[in-house]
Image 1 (cartoon, rainbow, N blue to C red):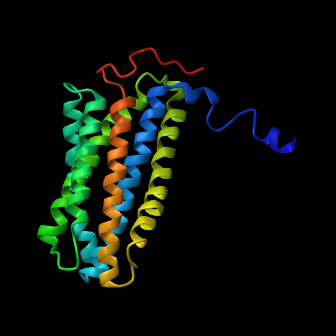
Image 2 (cartoon, helix red, strand yellow):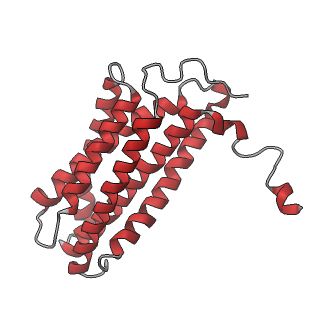
Image 3 (cartoon, rainbow, N blue to C red):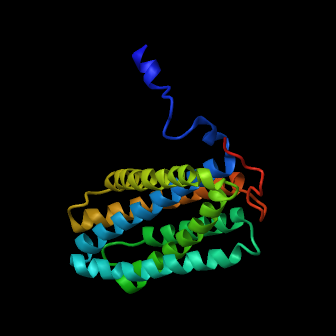
Length: 227
């Protein structure tokens, strides 16, 4: 009885009706998936750079600067495309770019060089993921009354945080099934397997986005109401 009562609080963190807002729920699901790819990819790449290529922590951080720049450029491009392309189309294209980038990175091995084997894929991945964040946010928040914007934003950010944790857990599990992360040879094999997993994950999220995200420019219009 106590467990059943605890499961029905008078003021739940997320009101039950929030699950009926399809644009918010679908956008949050895509946010979860793309965040998982983003954070999982950063984790795997950090391990590869330091364990396989022998980079220091500072050098590894500097390598991610082009990745961060590409991420920013992707968001800017997506913001401009929203005037002409549906959120569904932008997010799907961004995720397909992430599939391509993950496939590129999965080909890396112990003989790969940063400039040719890692950096192009990393930059492409950042650009693709950056393209996803804008349409997901617009999709999720359009039509939400100002009085409920905080709850909706919290719902979306919960998806982001859960995705980050799950991405590291899932992709590291896939990676370590192919090799240990503590040796150069093992980390190279693990990196390759992990990014194959990332490509599969990105493809799955792309299919979901193509099916569930809004296909029109008026994302939700004025028809979403939260009570």
